[in-house]
Image (cartoon, rainbow, N blue to C red; front, side, top):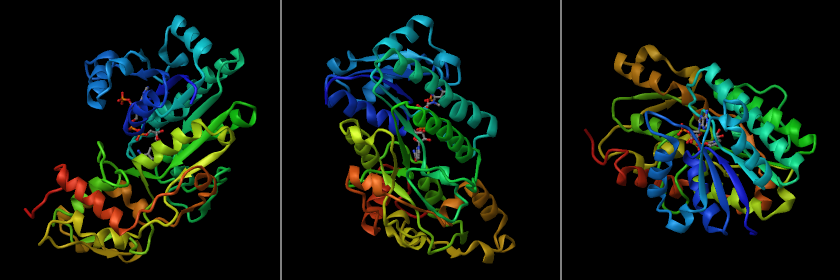
Length: 361
Ligand SMILES: NC(=O)c1ccc[n+]([C@@H]2O[C@H](COP(=O)([O-])OP(=O)(O)OC[C@H]3O[C@@H](n4cnc5c(N)ncnc54)[C@H](OP(=O)(O)O)[C@@H]3O)[C@@H](O)[C@H]2O)c1
């Protein structure tokens, strides 16, 4: 890879895991857009992140921290910083987003749709200046709609998706404007991961999101029934596979103008997940699965109802009738196997790291 000058928005689950190979693959320089938050400056937060990621001094020297916010015009950067970006940057990787499935519409709209419009505005100025080679946009497989029953294709957006929440809707709107810019000539690659979980071989993750909070409650022994179709598929993407695919694309010029579903082609079923011993302490009874049409909440205790309510935002993903084309992704990288053995590795890592309890009680 020839050395690039990169603007990276977002240092969450995916952005921060990208930072390391971006710095190690070559003598790339990375400008990282970060917010001040909870009384810590962007620079203080970045310093803590660099320690966590174990960056060397020479790697740190190639990272510039830009205090900014994607919801602001020009990403909240002052005029001088914007000019530097426009004159210098070859590659923009946009991962910043409001990702909570329970986030309200205003937040999702501001960060995901309007924030992406602001990133596009800057990307277009970089491209016009003649330097930008590509914008990598992190979308989501859920633009297809968590409530849809369809085969989602890679190189199109569905016309009438059944979105399950504001996050899905706003990411759809964001991808819509990105695709419009791409069709107007901006060099763009779109990645749509499914639910990003632990690494392929080790199950390692820093963030226990998506399936993990649900499995923690399911493994508590307090829930006796769960509204999920045992045959429904759970669409998972190992974190290292997602990062590897994005990195691989940077050396593959043919990926410009294309969209990639980053997900396993043969996803496990809900039944396989609930059969996976690694998520459940021995002696704890597992919830019985009921297809949603047969689920009777009045048979639950008030405590069970409260617990189920707290994770109701993820019910669509345990009753999914979606499947995903992965033709482009399969050309780019080997697709992951998310079978029972992989689920066991995820569960074991969650137990070993203390996220899930090892024993009952
Ligand atoms: N993780 C998944 O399962 C998954 C699956 C499919 C698609 N994706 C997509 O992949 C991308 C990255 O996801 P992720 O899991 O890495 O997300 P994440 O862990 O929630 O991190 C989101 C990042 O965006 C930043 N951010 C949020 N609002 C911002 C703002 N107004 N200005 C600047 N930065 C802001 C956050 O900064 P703070 O630290 O300041 O909050 C954080 O660094 C997103 O576009 C997401 O939609 C993720």
